[in-house]
Length: 121
Image 1 (cartoon, rainbow, N blue to C red):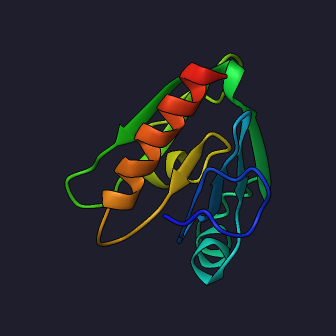
Image 2: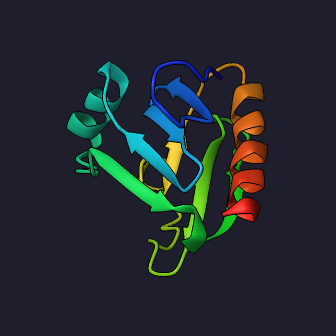
Protein backbone atom coordinates (compact mmCIF):
# COMPACT_ATOMS: atom_id res chain seq x y z
CA UNK A 1 0.00 0.00 0.00
CA UNK A 2 1.51 3.31 -1.09
CA UNK A 3 0.39 6.90 -0.77
CA UNK A 4 2.52 8.77 -3.32
CA UNK A 5 1.26 10.35 -6.52
CA UNK A 6 -2.18 11.96 -6.20
CA UNK A 7 -3.08 14.99 -4.08
CA UNK A 8 -5.20 13.95 -1.11
CA UNK A 9 -4.57 10.25 -1.69
CA UNK A 10 -4.70 8.38 1.63
CA UNK A 11 -3.82 4.90 0.33
CA UNK A 12 -3.75 2.82 -2.81
CA UNK A 13 -3.30 -0.80 -3.75
CA UNK A 14 -2.52 -2.45 -7.09
CA UNK A 15 -3.49 -5.98 -8.00
CA UNK A 16 -4.99 -8.26 -10.64
CA UNK A 17 -8.22 -6.28 -10.35
CA UNK A 18 -6.48 -2.98 -11.24
CA UNK A 19 -5.86 -0.12 -8.83
CA UNK A 20 -7.91 0.99 -5.81
CA UNK A 21 -7.31 4.51 -4.50
CA UNK A 22 -8.66 5.86 -1.21
CA UNK A 23 -9.27 9.60 -0.88
CA UNK A 24 -10.72 11.41 2.16
CA UNK A 25 -14.21 11.46 0.55
CA UNK A 26 -14.24 8.59 -1.96
CA UNK A 27 -12.89 5.30 -3.27
CA UNK A 28 -11.81 5.20 -6.90
CA UNK A 29 -11.22 1.89 -8.69
CA UNK A 30 -9.56 1.66 -12.10
CA UNK A 31 -9.68 -1.80 -13.62
CA UNK A 32 -6.88 -2.62 -16.04
CA UNK A 33 -4.04 -5.03 -16.70
CA UNK A 34 -3.53 -8.41 -18.33
CA UNK A 35 -5.34 -10.44 -15.63
CA UNK A 36 -8.44 -8.24 -15.74
CA UNK A 37 -8.46 -8.34 -19.57
CA UNK A 38 -8.03 -12.13 -19.67
CA UNK A 39 -10.85 -12.72 -17.18
CA UNK A 40 -13.16 -10.45 -19.18
CA UNK A 41 -12.34 -12.22 -22.46
CA UNK A 42 -12.59 -15.77 -21.12
CA UNK A 43 -15.62 -15.40 -18.85
CA UNK A 44 -17.40 -12.50 -20.60
CA UNK A 45 -17.85 -10.56 -17.38
CA UNK A 46 -18.09 -7.13 -19.06
CA UNK A 47 -17.30 -5.07 -15.98
CA UNK A 48 -16.99 -1.34 -15.51
CA UNK A 49 -13.52 0.05 -16.15
CA UNK A 50 -13.78 2.74 -13.44
CA UNK A 51 -15.90 3.07 -10.32
CA UNK A 52 -16.10 5.86 -7.75
CA UNK A 53 -17.86 5.24 -4.43
CA UNK A 54 -18.49 8.15 -2.08
CA UNK A 55 -17.49 7.22 1.46
CA UNK A 56 -20.58 8.89 2.94
CA UNK A 57 -22.70 6.32 1.00
CA UNK A 58 -20.63 3.36 2.18
CA UNK A 59 -22.34 1.10 4.71
CA UNK A 60 -19.91 -1.84 4.80
CA UNK A 61 -16.50 -3.13 3.77
CA UNK A 62 -16.30 -6.92 3.64
CA UNK A 63 -13.47 -9.33 2.96
CA UNK A 64 -14.85 -12.20 0.89
CA UNK A 65 -12.90 -15.44 1.31
CA UNK A 66 -12.90 -18.70 -0.56
CA UNK A 67 -11.15 -21.96 0.28
CA UNK A 68 -9.41 -22.25 -3.08
CA UNK A 69 -9.40 -18.73 -4.49
CA UNK A 70 -8.01 -15.43 -3.27
CA UNK A 71 -9.80 -12.87 -1.15
CA UNK A 72 -11.37 -9.68 -2.40
CA UNK A 73 -12.99 -6.61 -0.86
CA UNK A 74 -16.71 -5.98 -1.37
CA UNK A 75 -18.10 -2.53 -0.65
CA UNK A 76 -21.74 -2.22 0.37
CA UNK A 77 -23.86 0.88 -0.29
CA UNK A 78 -27.44 1.63 -1.29
CA UNK A 79 -28.04 0.40 -4.83
CA UNK A 80 -24.88 -1.72 -5.05
CA UNK A 81 -24.99 -5.04 -6.93
CA UNK A 82 -26.07 -8.00 -4.82
CA UNK A 83 -23.69 -10.97 -4.61
CA UNK A 84 -24.43 -13.39 -7.43
CA UNK A 85 -22.82 -16.46 -5.88
CA UNK A 86 -20.43 -16.71 -8.85
CA UNK A 87 -16.96 -16.04 -7.42
CA UNK A 88 -15.42 -14.32 -10.47
CA UNK A 89 -18.48 -12.20 -11.21
CA UNK A 90 -18.56 -11.07 -7.59
CA UNK A 91 -14.78 -10.44 -7.44
CA UNK A 92 -14.96 -8.17 -10.49
CA UNK A 93 -18.28 -6.47 -9.74
CA UNK A 94 -18.46 -2.68 -9.66
CA UNK A 95 -18.39 -2.75 -5.85
CA UNK A 96 -15.51 -5.23 -5.45
CA UNK A 97 -11.73 -5.26 -5.72
CA UNK A 98 -9.42 -8.26 -6.16
CA UNK A 99 -5.96 -7.40 -4.81
CA UNK A 100 -3.57 -10.36 -4.73
CA UNK A 101 -3.14 -14.05 -5.43
CA UNK A 102 -0.62 -14.62 -2.64
CA UNK A 103 -0.40 -12.06 0.15
CA UNK A 104 -3.61 -10.39 1.28
CA UNK A 105 -2.15 -8.35 4.14
CA UNK A 106 -2.26 -5.16 2.03
CA UNK A 107 -5.93 -5.91 1.31
CA UNK A 108 -6.70 -6.17 5.03
CA UNK A 109 -4.75 -2.97 5.75
CA UNK A 110 -6.77 -1.18 3.07
CA UNK A 111 -10.01 -2.52 4.56
CA UNK A 112 -9.10 -0.88 7.87
CA UNK A 113 -8.04 2.36 6.15
CA UNK A 114 -11.34 2.57 4.23
CA UNK A 115 -13.35 1.90 7.41
CA UNK A 116 -11.46 4.63 9.28
CA UNK A 117 -11.85 7.13 6.41
CA UNK A 118 -15.60 6.33 6.12
CA UNK A 119 -16.07 7.02 9.83
CA UNK A 120 -14.54 10.48 9.32
CA UNK A 121 -16.49 11.24 6.11
